[in-house]
Length: 99
Image 1 (tube, rainbow, N blue to C red):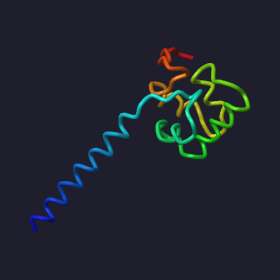
Image 2 (cartoon, helix red, strand yellow):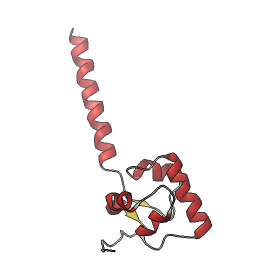
Image 3 (tube, rainbow, N blue to C red):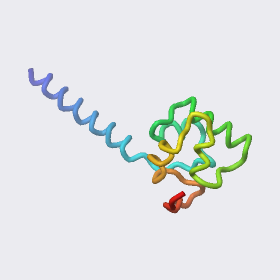
């Protein structure tokens, strides 16, 4: 019985660590990140959309604005707005300006 209690506590702690690490994802540079990094750090982006971002960037050049991300098929303004505080165009954070 004591083992079950210990395993339960370990499970709770591990669960909290996983939730904490995903809740505080590092800002991601949409002009340099690979597909895996984009998928891991942008809420609502999976592997297919992340690859679409990389392909779009390769075919059209660097994003000039975070709102340009919405030009990628499958990505809308709502998704960009939800993530804009975590998106970078360079190594410097994007200024929060209204469109």
